[in-house]
Length: 337
Image 1 (cartoon, rainbow, N blue to C red):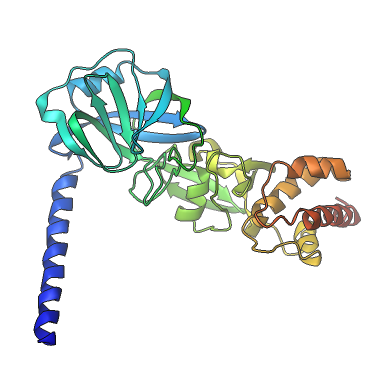
Image 2 (image 1 turned 180 degrees about the vertical axis):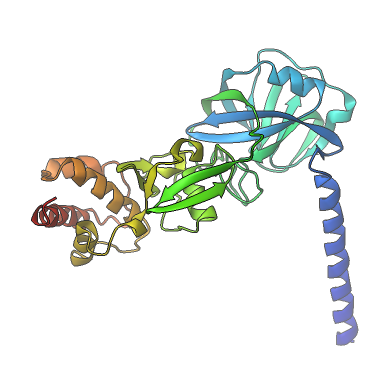
């Protein structure tokens, strides 16, 4: 009996998997259409709170009318814990073929009675008929996050979800984007090594380093450039990689903690003062320190406190951080700067 039950359950799981795969195949359709609608070359880049999402529009009248209204600067509001809503100045003409009731995360859609466009960051059933405008190219992250950037359906911008946006309403920019006909290869100089990545121009450097180049010492936390966990050096300046886009840093010198030699004064000081506890925030704080000491080689305690106000240590190891910075300054002076 147990053997029969096991075979039955296994068969049921296989049938369920086949059914799911069949539905996924129908949903994705071809590269030039989605949900039975043809896709155009029109793309829309949406930026809010330092993050960017890119959508590819359908080849429909409504999508063209929306595209022709850009660029815009509008208020952004969260609605029903599933979507971000904004109102273009002119209403759009829609047809029945674009209508739906069950929306999927990542869709850019339109509700004709209210005249609002919305981005779904969760699957959502609509009681009234909605109309499709486009699909995410970049920006809806996997899991809980709504990313802004590549919807390679795997990551990139993990912002504009309810956790990373404390305010209910914020403003954002809408601009049209011309697709890069020659591909999206960007040359990067990371830790002295020439690299090339094939990503969307609006992809944050943070996700390029972590997901494309495998440099996971660069940490994600806030996604809005506030906490300092993702700090790297760009041409020697401390920058928050979650709000630095790959198209803006190509050809520049990018340094992560791996790019500092083992005998670097900051690394030596951090080890001697036993600064880390969990260690999660330390790479970013150390790189912030490197940039800080390059500008203030003999810092005062007040100056150290000021620069540390810009970074967050989860474990509260600020006293040891302060001591390590003072020691790193001394070691740097001994090495002749």
